[in-house]
Length: 161
Image: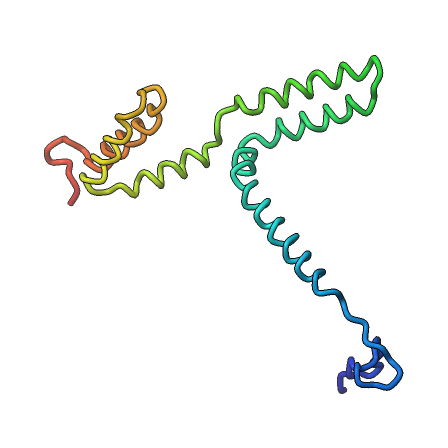
């Protein structure tokens, strides 16, 4: 059994420009430039929104619930809308205060594990010394844990074989 050709019923939508009596319809040259500008603008907008998306990924559930409740509260516009609007606004305002996800911490640990030599560690510690301890506490804790894990057990006779 042989497959049928898909081009059997070929339809010509426009005549060739060389045919008699047909005037060729051309687009203005500016339309291509406008489309290209729109595409580039959309791409730059998406690239600019990537940090916002990374921030919102850790807090998407309260943000989504807050947006839904706020929109429902605004649409209702009555005495009952306050019971929906206020929790929605509270969720929207509390979302930035939530801590990051464990995935973000594991990503930070992987990045800090890249500093393997003692010179790299000293450079990183010198950079961290420029900032207050309460700002860099999490980084220092991760570095200390990685240093103790790399040193291994300190009990004589229990070393690696």
